Amino acid sequence: MTLAPESLGRSSRPSRRQRLFRSMLDALRNPLLAVGGFLVLIQLVAVLFVGHILPFGPNTMDYNALLGAPGASHLLGTDELGRDILSRLVDGARLSLSVGLGSVAMAALIGVPLGLVAGYLGGAFDAIFMRLIDSIIALPPLVLALTIAAVLGTGLVNTTIAIAIVAIPAFTRLVRGQVLSLKTNDYVLAAESLGAPTWLILFRHILPNAINPVIVQASLAIGFAIITESSLSFIGLGAQPPQSTWGSMVQVGFQYLELQPFYALAPATMIFLAVLGFNMLGEGLRQQFDPASRGIK
Image 1 (cartoon, rainbow, N blue to C red):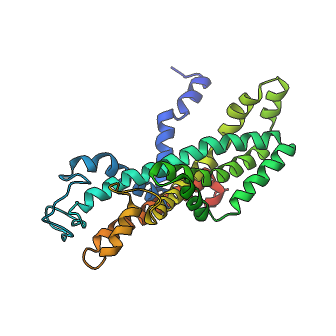
Image 2 (image 1 turned 180 degrees about the vertical axis):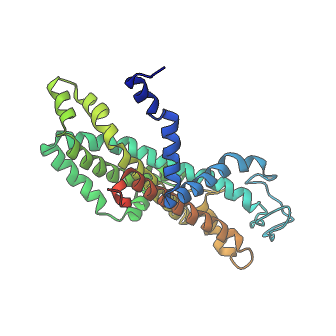
Image 3 (image 1 turned 90 degrees about the horizontal axis):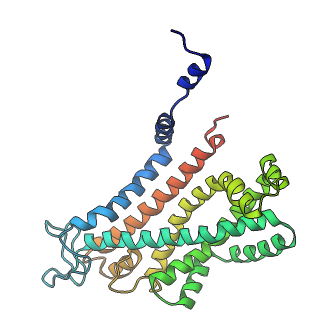
């Protein structure tokens, strides 16, 4: 029994599951992507699972163990109110990552459509709008976030909004540049000639082909958002007691550095690993989406 050429062609094609498996193997060969993904995964596991199995809540006080040293009951010791540092560290991961993910999601939801419209319409609207974006980018990001947070007031919600406003121009400029290079492609011109509405052209034909750089930018922006939130909480504009973000823990723990070094060193280390993980993940994704950056011709 012989198979038709069409059957041979279909049987030789890898299935969707095989293509996904090969993509995962290829991703694991990228050390930046593998290490960055591992660090991010550890943080997500800590947020989702570790907090539920710890014996102490983040605000549970033990007045018999003020600034206690690490031990069997408190693995990283306790703070000035007898609260378990490990529990507050895990709870701080939840709040810090929530601010990072929330602010970047907000910035992308606003910045991506603005970049699509500006790049596609062009003309006077694009020129005026991009000069406004350039004026925002010209300001130091941390100073701008600090100013906006001071105007809006303290709290994690206002901190999230402030960081999102600072991150919007990066998404806008990135997407606008992608649109300028994509809108002259044949499939876009064909859709225009057939009378497709503008929103359909933007979100069905252009955005899917410009989404990879947005994913990379989002990963890098989360690292920036975490360190910005930590900076704002450190100076008192972010989380307010008894909330326990990493920045606020460093700010208070710094006062007891000699008595309880883990109080400040543990959240500072987590900030470093979180930012490192998301930056490595972003750089690994950039290499994965752009084979030329890995030397593949």
